[in-house]
Amino acid sequence: MRIAVVIPAFNEDATVARIAEGALRHAERVFVVDDGSRDGTAAALAGLPVTLLRNDVNLGKAASLARGFAAALEQSMDAVVTLDADGQHRPADIPRLVEAAAAHPGDIIIGTRLAGRERMPPLRRFGNRQADFWIAWAAGYPIRDTQCGFRLYPAALLEGLAVRGGRRNGFVFESEVLIEAARVGCHARCVSIDTIYGLSPRASHYRAAADTTCIVLMVAGHLLRSGLHPLGLLRSLGVLSHPAFPRDSAGAKSPDALG
Image 1 (tube, helix red, strand yellow):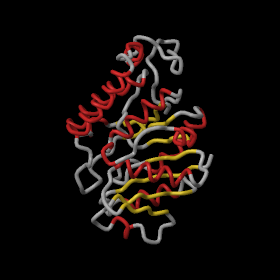
Image 2: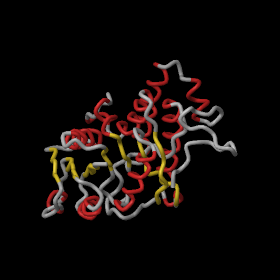
Image 3: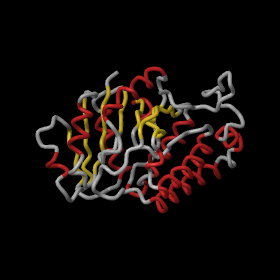
Image 4: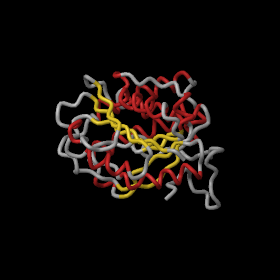
């Protein structure tokens, strides 16, 4: 499987080189999208064999991911892994996502922060839980940690996905991808990873209240257009099983972490 890694970065000079170096060990190509950084993000990558894409101004995470996806797809990759540049994700976990993708071809793999969730700031944890509920409802099956940016996307999905990557979409982009993917039969599978906070010297770019509200409004639009998707609500809550995630012999809810 030919893997590319896309790393969106905005003012990440303290951590981006370490993340890019780690990603290079597990991918054929690494694309870093410098989203109009005002620090030394670009300079920190000097000498590394990565492809640096630079936005002249800050366009937001959605636009940066879309640009990185386009560059990766031009190289005929089989899948694209995304991870944040602030140290919240370990590049060493990339092979685990690739292994899960081999077991579930065509699906999205999410590095799900299950271990050490108590280290997540309370407001951020609350916002994530709210987003999980709404997005799972609209997608029609349980999804854990919908806000984690450490993911593997099949190239075929990215080539045909109709999700806007403009500035106004911001952090909504990664949430809407999960909903639109479900419409074409592509589901998110979870691989458990550690919850890591405090390694970046700057505050999170994610605004827990404002960005979660934008996500909920986007999901509400999808639900209204689908007649509130009652079957999706029942499946997302585990009341009914989803064909892609049948209950095990003990009746456990799915999907669960793959490892």
